[in-house]
Image 1 (tube, rainbow, N blue to C red):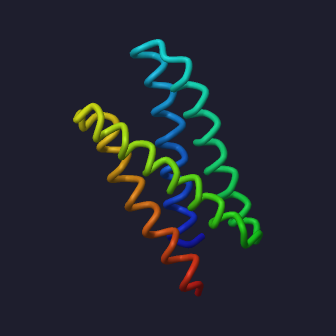
Image 2 (image 1 turned 90 degrees about the vertical axis):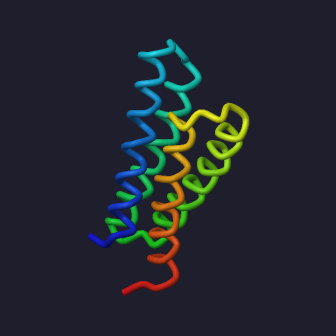
Image 3 (image 1 turned 120 degrees about the vertical axis):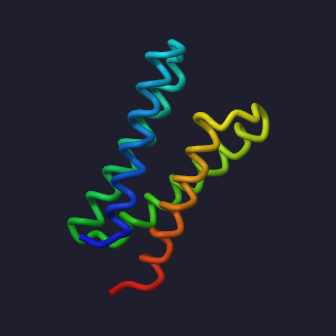
Length: 106
């Protein structure tokens, strides 16, 4: 298992739990649904990459990139570090690792 897959799994789990926490704290069904769908999509894409399907990490990267843009807009709008700023930082970190793994395979 390489670092790109670990980054994808980690960010997917963070997104999934973030959606659940958003629902628990604020009763936001949108957070629950979007967090579950996007988090599970990243986790499944990372699993596909782990199974040897080369498109898995690329898909995880696209979803992560979309989420980084979404949370960056949310952070710019609310100016609240939690959760948007934190998700941007972790998303960019995960995205850099995934893109590095995609363009420089072992």
